[in-house]
Figure 1 (cartoon, one colour):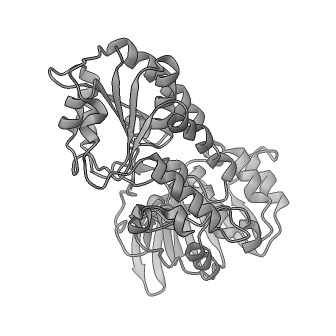
Figure 2 (cartoon, rainbow, N blue to C red; figure 1 turned 60 degrees about the vertical axis):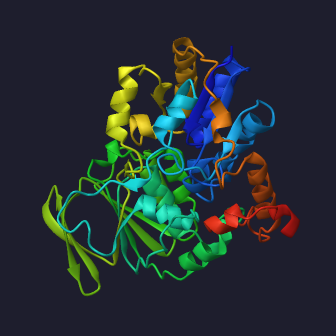
Amino acid sequence: MSAKIAIVGSGPAGCYTAQALLKRAPEAEVDLIDALPVPYGLVRYGVAADHQGTKGVTRQFDRLFTRQGARFFGNLRIGQDLSLADLRQAYDAVVLATGLGADLRLGIEGDDLPGVIGAARLTRALYEHPDAAGLPDLGAHPVVIGTGNVAIDILRLLAKTPAELHGSDLGPGPTAWLAGQGIRQITVLGRSAAEAARFSPVMVKELGELSRIDIQVQNPAADPEEALNRAAAASHGPLPVVFRFATRPLTLAPRPEGLALTVETPEGRDQIAATSVITAIGFDCDGALDRAGLLAEAEAGAVSGQGRLYTAGWFRTGPTGALPQCREEGQALAARLLAEVTPDPARPGRARLADLPGVVDFDHWAQIDAHERAEAAPDRCRRKLARRDELLRPALSQNA
């Protein structure tokens, strides 16, 4: 008897879990559900537009739907189009892998002022998420708070020349926005010492290879061979990028040309003039689901009359870990789920979703994918459809 399993969220956590489930139980009925009309979540809308090698993981995810029997149900919002309770009654198990779509707040006075921009908000707009707000004006001197890989992604894109964006999937609107910002200096703040910064050395090396950048480091790591020190020594471009470590934000206040950021450093308090402040300090739940309550319920185990509830990816762990960790966690979750779930032949599974209005399938995504690739500019790998109504338009390949 085959288990019926619904995975809410078709980003890397959901896809790796589905992959592991179908490898262990090829006969299982595994369905991936997404609020967006397209799959792959964080890979499409979170991985940087110029990191196409990382985005290539979608080719193996495609095989879930083309070879392994998984089904995609897109444009289906759990909690709006179908309740989570109804979904759990229909399936033997439900895995919540919806990620974290909101920005963590700085938690200081003035962190809600105009000109304070969260990394999730900014990258959604840059990567043309259909629900994104417009791209903001950063001004001549943006300040980035955070020294993780998301901060480095943003910094790299802001510093790249048009030629260095060749081969990316950055759309014409974001490309024009980048060209028009007129940035003259970028300051990057980290609360920790340089030795404790969380960015990948590979990402920093890539940053140092940009033609336009001039990396300067205040309170650097002592080791001259440390990645950021080496990148600073190798960079000699016209755009200053100043890293300030051991610098803790205290308050934000408005000023005529933007924002005044008061910080605490080992030398005492200082004030930084910024035209905008980009916060890249982590992500939070967007409130579409009661994350805290659902995590507790999943931990508690089986509930009478409902399929077992599981959580995966950032929804479970918070914003930590890269794709290899998602794969490992997906494998562990699949083993646990299949050991704990007893299939119930009375559950309808995907038949419950069959007649819901507006739902799209993987064939629809294949049409969108072909259309976007066919419409790509010569220096781009695709041209994303950015609006939900465009993504829902049928038979796109016939209109290419």
